[in-house]
Image (cartoon, rainbow, N blue to C red; front, side, top):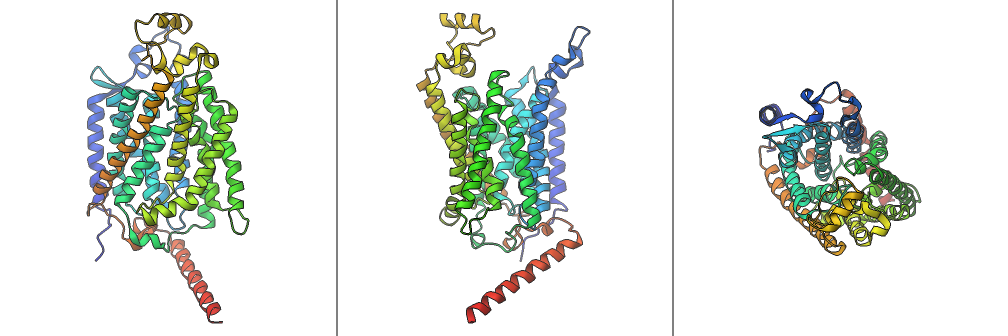
Length: 480
């Protein structure tokens, strides 16, 4: 007997509880920051100096990535388009609300309140991106109740890890290759390991794409591709650092796209292009440049990183994903380990190399702004000299390049460890029997959770007819 998957009670009760909790916490702890507070505005204030005009363009771009880019990208299954887009919508909306609070307690909490501004929303959207990347590992095999629970648990795990790494380990990771991509990847793999379904390794009748779903998925890829420079540069230092971040991201994406087309044609037995490669592998360069995106790595290095990331991602999809499913019991449905894990590791390694090679000769005094951990500590005479050249420069830790490289390495391992443990714990919670988890037979099927239009039935009937015709043809050819 199949367990009930009705959302009639489960989803409304969970949403009601979450909304009451969030509303209460907003009422108790959230207020406006100075740039949104009317008390701090007067006749001498220049409205155009408000931080809104600095941060909102990046926020808007990341909004498009979260709700349109990810939404379309996750609608690649033929009979799971509603779920891919709508569950993305639901999960992202909650994750952002929850992240505003959880991150706020760690990053923006002062005077007994979380001071809310657009930069909080931007940080919350990065936390949301972590959840959506992890969602890719379990897409088609989870209910909306399970996904909300995953977001409920993943956001605090991420916020604590992010806070600890940035406050105590102190690393350079402008594009989030370590704290966003690696964390999201290994958290998602931890969840899908616990939710392992042996029968899905043999394939599933609904685990197919269609002409329309592939087009929609490519549209999501294009949205992500176009706005990725904003994602990588949003939280970098304003000025030349942010300028470099935009340039490096575009160059990395461009080279990975060209490489993806070439690899797809070469390794296709009929010399044709494969849509899955275009939808996913083309984006690898955006991740691969992330850890060093604001550094003086040179345009050529960004181009090379795009090629390297794309190559690793392509072969990961081709060989590593099947191996992980059959040998390690990790069913990575969207291949997040290839697009975010492998490329995140390459990016982190490139970031360490860039730190080791950074010198004042290349960066000038601004090196101590970009690599703030290398700035002289308080009381060091050199700090006063640098502050004359760079007003507002804060005391650093006085680390050498070699010591900072070790801290970067420590951040990589600690992030992977924390995310994996968090994913395993979350997976066990999501596996509880009242979570409306679909049966193996009902996976990758919109009809389980949605009232479907009439043409959905006809399209499914057509698929069954085509499959039967192909089986009969194979049987006839075998006999002859």
